[in-house]
Length: 243
Image 1: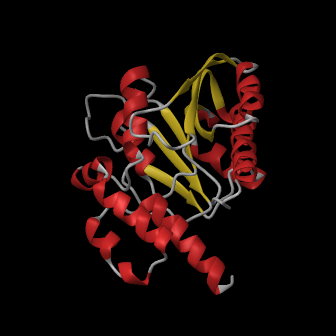
Image 2: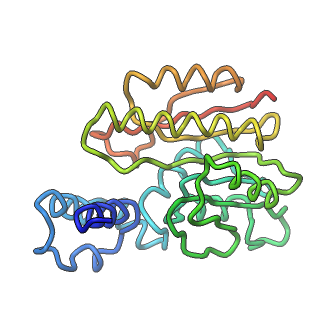
């Protein structure tokens, strides 16, 4: 990895992970103008502040919280697969909602398995497959061994490729990643199950919607308030999986 590519990777990881104002302000003068603009936006972002206060690993937790508060996808006792899980904020939400840490002994205890190419710090109530490719059959084999009965009730994905700056190319990579989730659903998702995946709006989004509609009884587009208005980010919510 070259110094330039290493710097891009580190900044991409920061964009996914950081919510501490202390961390954000370190070495600010050594950062590029684009990085400094992003850091200043983070400092002003109420969701970043709320994530720090509520001990979520990043602001993206509030996107899933909004979706789940409205659609009630995550219930105690359910089995959840979190794709692109690093740094683990969506898994934190899933652990709480499905009771996979056994916090409430009166409720059924669920299961949460997270997968990412990056390292995911440990989380009570979740099993993480760090440094694993969600599209790799070897990963699927490990995943099946971790799921009760080899089946999941919900697949979640907030994953995204590192942005190249070329909008059309990034959009195509994102849609391709989402299409792999439809293939994963064929292997692990229970009949009646649900899938939530992030995508960047563009000309290929219809292809993904058609693919999901062929396998799910209902597919809709959602954009939580926690998603920045200027962002092309949206989510497909697919429910009532048909095997």
